[in-house]
Amino acid sequence: MLAEDDNAMTRAEAQAFKRACCCFGLVVTSTTSKASTGVSPHRYQLNTRIGKAQELLLTKGESLSMVAAATGFADQSHFTRTFKRVTGATPHEWHQNRTP
View 1: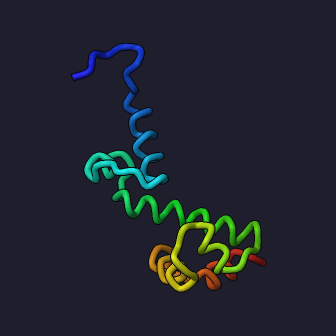
View 2 (view 1 turned 90 degrees about the horizontal axis):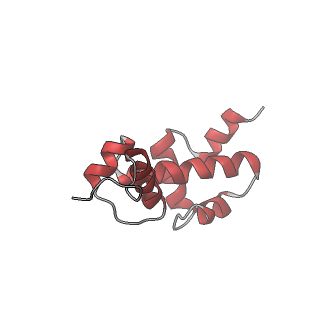
């Protein structure tokens, strides 16, 4: 076991590191990730990607295919299916409910 010294990470730093690893696709054990974020690493990554997609849809007015590519989805169809599964609405429906 590591001795507690100036080089040891705090619990908050360790949790932030685990969350960052999930964002970059690094392997972190599922149990520790779920304990720190409340969701599985896969769900955390999906939520992060969909959040970025929502931001792009609202601020940039990008096409769905461009948003899909920018957020790491294989294609527009894969993006749309995943978006609907996570948010409960298609990207178009979601965007219409957010704009005047």
